[in-house]
Image 1 (tube, rainbow, N blue to C red):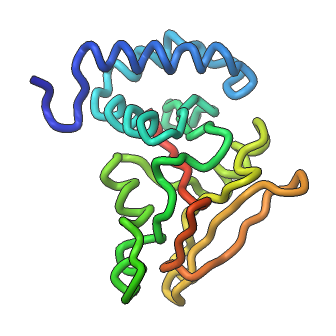
Image 2: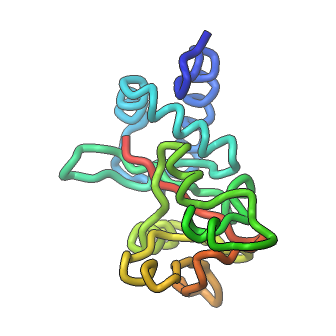
Length: 187
């Protein structure tokens, strides 16, 4: 029996196979990164495999989009064409969810990300992702929001329209069927 937040050997192999196929199919996302090194890091981090599996199961199609030279970690991000379908119709955080008096969404992006063991993309990470391809042409994604904006009741989201990345604001309690969140995970 698998422990909580870990995968069985079979689940691990299925996930690794899926990630490897995606990695090899999209080399422009991770130039000069070798799959064998990524796989070694993944196998040494079962809790990160669990988080990647959560990203996969909610429609994120995670892939390596770079590495952090200061931490020697690989950066995985949701690379699904549109905001992951299993993570849409969420307000921004618990405070926003609690503030809604009626028509509450099922949850919040920040809480779901925490349960998954991932983080929402920063604006910089989102812009980097969009430099690698076209994403969110029909949807939008909540992104990390500066505390000063959140304190005033707002939250940030981004999308790609007219060949341009747009970053907008909205009330944190809002939610839409076409807005989810994109996650990042360092391994």
